[in-house]
Image 1 (cartoon, rainbow, N blue to C red):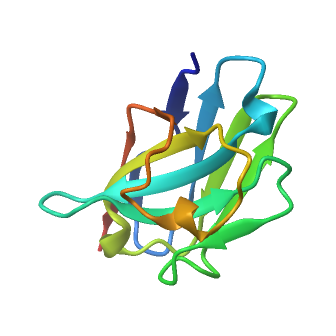
Image 2: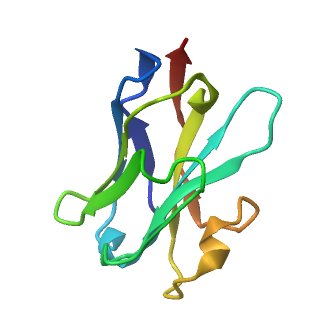
Length: 128
């Protein structure tokens, strides 16, 4: 069993930055692909970014490309989401997710894909 705990959310003005962290329990974190998703009130969950177990491959949603960066530190069992140039439309609860399967592919960007583990979420609010 893997537990994921997100942190780093908060209130920030438009144009500001935040760094989210997702700490994972368990010794097999380094073998998992990791994803970040978000859900705004009244909207469906949407994909934000994903990173391969090794960190050498990433995916980003189009509306965060160039502003957000996903990274991971397998020695610390942690994945990060650096968010710059934040916009009010980035306001949402952000969730991290872990996938145990070894296959890296675009399916990891599907919000309906069945990741194996999910965190409880952290709120990000961007004021205008």
